Length: 593
Image 1 (tube, rainbow, N blue to C red):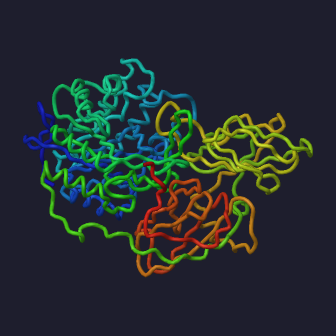
Image 2: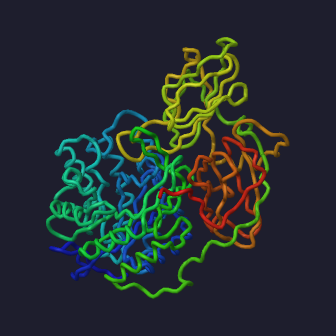
Image 3: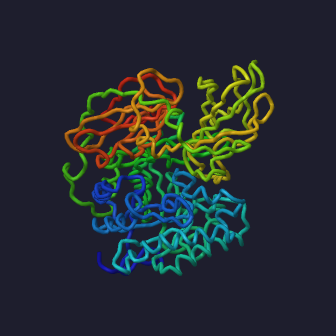
């Protein structure tokens, strides 16, 4: 890509001093297997987009302080280079807060382990690690700006900041200006933007005069552009998050948006001369335990799929919305010719079901796991655990009659057993905190799952696990043995044991093998299973839960191979299913009509 210029004019973006309309789509590199980036980027160009936008998740790139990862699925440099190779421009949004229905909104859990720092403020205890993170990201992005021959034409400072916190105007300005100065000091020359929902309050609270204000919305275009124009009186209007769908959470339905309504809003934006970033063009998948959660009074953990009812579905295939958006875009900008061979074909026929073999009870795989011996029930964060599971164990001796187990708060789901026999579950989304144990003697075990850290609102940064006090018959146990479940290495542990012949009670690990002629995309049908995690070889695909709406997990072709493919399942609520099934379509659940 040739060196050029990109700046903000009196009424337009200017590319090499000529008016330029940004027609962009969101595509998060960290939600797509890196060997499938090219397919998704090319599909964006074929729909008529000229730009790709992405967030940058701080907690993935820096899982522990000073440990910066930028390879494999986090190779932002390669992603931006592929965008450029396809002839597209790029918008980069490093946050540091990204929301995105992502675990913790992208803020690392380690920020909150010790003390109450001023998150998203000019508190030096927050700005110091933020600056370190941004400096590392900008080492990648700055050389890829358009004036250095790269694709990057815009960068965003913070994210919907006008909706966050109870800061004074001066405190907000100090924080945003500190971030802006970090960008400039690192060599950023492209325009810097901010984004907020187009209300007077949010637009006035979330930006600076030095940042170009943009809006985030999905409909009522004329009114929202009018409000945006009052706060950004000059320069181009831009909806930098045009919501064409929505996300799902466990226990609800699959949210979709009307294609006709989305088309009408997109057409209104383009007819008004505005620039646009479609959120999402392709959502992808919350692999592993990366999903976030919302809590506005009720805890709502986001599902594994981030399909978002986008123009390109979770498996990278075009939807009706793809073709409808392409037709609208063609009325305002040139679109490339396209044939069926240019896009991925429909998902192939599903393989036949394969036997699902019980390997072991989860407890048996944890027998040699290191224990923390403590005098109280600690949170995950006290043990420096950012994601996953803890198993709490204590010995009871308070009588043979039924007693009440009471917990201050469960974050987020707990399976309770006594002497190895399941007693029941406690779930945060149902606000459950007490359970009757059949007696007050024996070994009490509580397996706790973190279902995703809150990504929006005042509960960002809260700790996970059991939030005390934990009492039995009104008394706190004197000691606990706590195991951090090594979930990332569970397939290797399962492979090292001989499968059991009998059934087990409680959480269990199962295994299946599917033989393929060649690598291919797969869809696992998990309707018959309970709740838990699935791996293909040693890669965690994500969570499943019988409560729905999602009942499938997408397996990208690069994770498969010709021959035997081992699939490991941690089922926390085993159903006795004896086979693993596949599907030729994504099973995202019923929709709301």
